[in-house]
Image 1 (cartoon, helix red, strand yellow):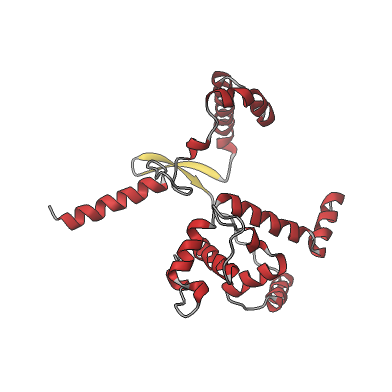
Image 2 (spheres, one colour):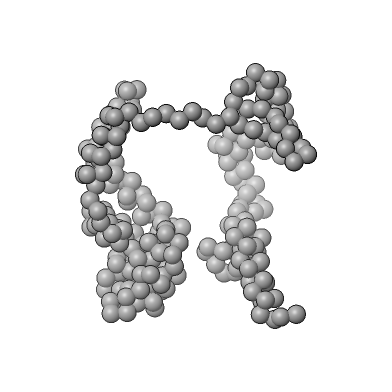
Length: 234
């Protein structure tokens, strides 16, 4: 046995298990067991009735499962009865077994007005780099100020919004920190970005930053016009 191949295989399976949440890391915000934060025992019993009523669910699992069983059975029967008349779906043999085949949709040509509108909209969109866009949005909304240190809520360092935006970009694009490192820029060194990613990016701070963005978006004239049109049913 080649130890190197065995080690690589083990690490690969471990990574898959972490993604499936079959294996957990403790303590960890991202890779921990999500069930660990669920209410248990007396705490759950105290709010169970209220939670079930709010969600429109029965308190007893047998009743809930019976309801879901009836829904699944009804959907199955309705689909089976309508299949002979459904021109968009059919059952064909393939590879020694029956296979569901969906009829492809006809291609619709784009009207000239849509092509013209797309060109006009694209002409209005500025061509900027993603990091610049994040920093500009922060300048409008101040969303990066919602990211606080996990143990020092008021702690601040120089150019912290730059570090936060870089860490967010690395997470959103799934590229890691490496493409964003700038050893000559204190806010973009490996140590700074790793520290920010570990201590500032949490579910709590992400929720607060998102709320700040939503509030700002709701104040825009265009969003307000869309809201009025929706209320009128237009």
